[in-house]
Amino acid sequence: MSRTPGGPVSAAPSPNALPSYLDPSNLGPWGIYLQQVDRVTPYLGNLARWVETLKRPKRALIVDVPIHLDDGTVAHFEGYRVQHNTSRGPGKGGVRFHQDVTLSEVMALSAWMSIKNAAVNVPYGGAKGGIRVDPRRLSRGELERVTRRYTSEIGIIIGPNKDIPAPDVNTDEQIMAWMMDTYSMNQGSTATGVVTGKPIDLGGSLGRREATGRGVFTVGVEAAKHIGLDIASARVIVQGFGNVGGVAGKLFAEAGARVVAVQDHGGTIYREAGLDVPLLLKHVAEHRTVAGFEGAESIPNDQFWDVDCDILVPAALEAQLTKDNAGRIKARMVIEGANGPTTPEADDILHDRNILVLPDVIANAGGVTVSYFEWVQDFSSFFWDEDEINARLVRIMKAAFAGIWQVAQDHKVSLRTATFIVACKRILHTRELRGLYP
Ligand code: NAD
Image 1: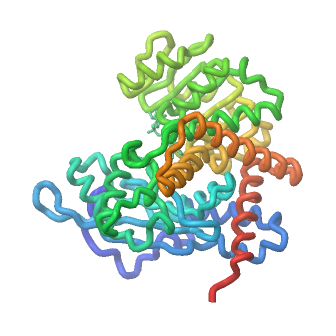
Image 2: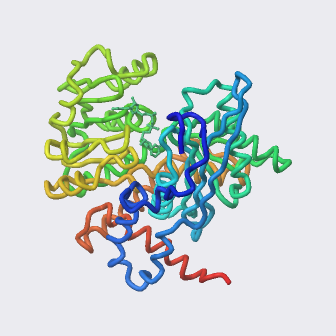
Image 3: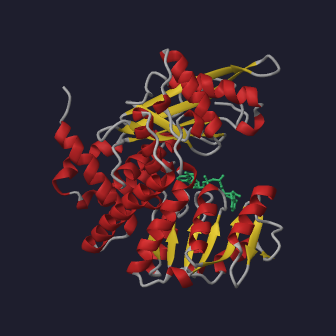
């Protein structure tokens, strides 16, 4: 298939080309997920007889998304929506707009949503969507047309009781508003519950923006108790100071911890005595990067991994902790705010060095938990105040983490494997109860 990166598909795929998920030489994200399932299968007891359910998506839709560009030409983009599992409830998971999105990636992300939703015990299956497009190359009008056509194309499988999309990489509240409107226009009535992460005025939830960072902080505090780490005197370093990292950093600082280093796409800053986090957030709001922040020294990006600290929060991109830097990490605990920030090799190195890793599938589940609250509020058209939302979030995150911690102790496995054990058992238990149709 020939294509300009991030641009429209310009020719039909070669009829002989293997779909990427069937290419044995390319394990890809879906292959990594399959390995993770294989690893937990011995712990699933009798439910293991249902494990094949987890190894294939229930439903995967590939859609053509043609739009008129501003110059009058027609461009075609490729979109996906994958529902990995719906045994526990409707599909739930974000939509990613990125030039490198592939079906394999969306399949894996949808499966990890099944795991995450089951880990925090919200009544959802797992789903994910994406469009292979670089949104920075589109005008606002083009972006709206891509979003609306994609929503219309996947409209046959989404819905408040079927599958509920949400924001992910390069999608935001405005895109959720367009998705909600398009779905509603096609249905003939307003359906706020078809997406979450909407603007507050369109049925969004208070506390949603901060929810993922708050969840990161909450599980961090719980894990710290188990390893005898005092948060009030802990040194924290954070990679990525956006929605997740910025909020987590703020909450750690409010709890008395010293945030000593922060890295983002613009650079890395360091202050031994601890950064003034509220001032730093103000700086980022104005300059869109931590670089240039007065009251901290700038250090080379690579030195970030050597900074003396107790807690490392990767909250930026995938595959940041690798076999090349995992041996240098000084932290006692890594809390994965980002999705997939630790490669499997780095995971093993951290484990051997007795560094506790709080995996993404539980550590960043605060976002989907408050998405669940948003969906519930939309159904009842009755909206809760922020204190109530935060209190419910903390309760769910603490309970989920306590259960996973216990499983890790019982089986002497990592928290990642323990989270998979808990989640896979929940999913397969509902599969068994429901039985097979027909
Ligand atoms: P964001 O866009 O608000 O922030 C991303 C941050 O990463 C920014 O500070 C950016 O400067 C930094 N960054 C980008 N490239 C970098 C680089 N090369 N080196 C260092 N830093 C870099 O995004 P976000 O919503 O905070 O999401 C961050 C991660 O958390 C992603 O992996 C996302 O999938 C995951 N996540 C987010 C949510 C959510 O609710 N926002 C929920 C679950 C998981």
